[in-house]
Every structure is written in structure tokens, then in C-alpha cells.
Amino acid sequence: MNAHEWALIVFTLLTQLSIGMLIATLAVRAFAGRKTNPERTAPISDLPIYVVVALMVLALIAALFHLGKITHVIGAVPNLATSWMSREVVAAVVFTALTVLLAFLIWRKIGNESMRMIIGWITALVGLYLLLAMSLTYMLPAQPAWNTLATPVTFFTTSLLLGVLGTAAVLVFTHATVDSQIIKGIAVASIVLVGLELLTMPLYLAFLSTQGAAALRSLSMMIGEYGWALVLRLLLVFAGGGLLAAYLFKNASTAKQEKMSTTLAYSAFALALVGEVIGRFLFYASSFRIGV
Image (cartoon, rainbow, N blue to C red; front, side, top):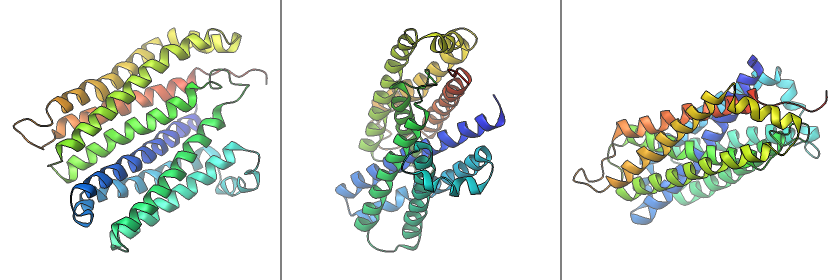
């Protein structure tokens, strides 16, 4: 793999993490606001919003390493009607701008929480569109290993899984005591998303075996040369998002009351993130293009 592909790994994963974290944080704010005064409970989840801004800035910098020049970003605008890549680039810029606006409103306490939540959910919708555009950018007939339903399913699942676990890690960093229902919600979401990832992979591998020579070459690399990476990726995601999440769910209402284990939260996120990095490496390293 070359530097441009590593830049794509950084861009896609940081973007997906950012979108997932925004959605998870908005869900936490909405839940906390329903239980008590939203103006009092919302500040515990301010930092994840600021983290999303920082992550998206880093993602755009990585995108520039791939595109080469900022003029290439500007040049994407005229192709919006025909190119999913152009839509992806523009949506990424718009999503970043909206997260900066949201963070500024929160920082300066401009408006009420209801107004900020409306802007937040509008930003999340832009983020979901960005995920769709990112997925369709890769679903090319000339790339059989990418041109499958597994691409959007994996991108959306990765976004939500990393977002949920990343939000949990930031929350315990800023606020040691977290409502047990929030912990259980995070744990259940993680377990469901890991289950979806583990279900998608064998179906995807089976599908590749029926899609011609290029797809078979990709399959051969995944289970042969990079078989160790495939297994390691699944184990790390399962350990981070599955086993640790199940432990959190089981112990959310123990004698420790609402205190989430910071070690578990950090470990779950770190394991899942490394697993997804390996998965994205496989995505690029094992693809073969039909024709020139």
C-alpha cells in the first residue's frame, strides 16, 4: 500500500468515527435531557462534540494528502450532479462546518439546548448522507470486491460502533459517574453492531466466491496472505465491542452504582479501533480492478 491509500484509511475511519460520535452524543444528550433539566445535563457531553470537530479537521487534512491540492477539493463542486466522490468531498466539508458551528454554539452558550439539538440532528443527517456518498464512491463495477452491499453495511456499522465506544471513552474521561441506563444503552448498541459485523463478513466472503476472477483474487488474499489480519480484526472487534460491552451491561447497576470503569471503556474503544484499522487496510490491500 502507498501513502495515498494510508491517507484514505485515516480519512475514512476518522470521518466515520466523527459521524458515529456525533450521533451517539446527541442520543446521550437527548436521553439525559428527558430525565432532568436538559440545560443542566447537556454539559456533561460537551467534550465529545469538540472531539468530533478535531477529528474532522484531521480527516480533511488526510483527504488533502490523498487529493494533493486544495484546488482538487474546489474542483469537486462542478461534478456534484454526476460524481459520488464529489458529493463525498463537499458533504465532508459541509459536515465539518456544521460541527464547528455546533461546537461554537455550545462553547459560547448561544441559544437554548433545544435549538442546539436541532442543529445537531441536522448535522447528523448530513453525516449520514456523507456515509452514503462515501460508500457509493467505492461501489464501482470495476472493483468487484468493493461493489457489494457489504461496503455500505461495513461503513455504517464501523461508524456507529466506533462512535458509541468513542463517546463512552470521552464521557468517562470527563465525567466519572455516568447514568447506568446510558451505560446499558452503549453496551447493547455495541453488542448489536458487533453482531452485525460478524454476520456480514462470512456472507461477504461467500459472495466474493461467485463474482469472477478479480473477486476470487481478493478472496484468496483475504483468507490466504492476509488471513492473519482478517482473523485478528474480527477478534479485536469482538473483544472490544462484544465481550467488554457485555461486561459493562452486566455490571452497570452493581454496588458501584453508576460509575463506569474507565479502563474498560478505553480498552473497548482501543481494541475496536485497531480492529477497524486492520479491516480498512484489508479493504484497500485486497482489492483488484477489472481492466485498466
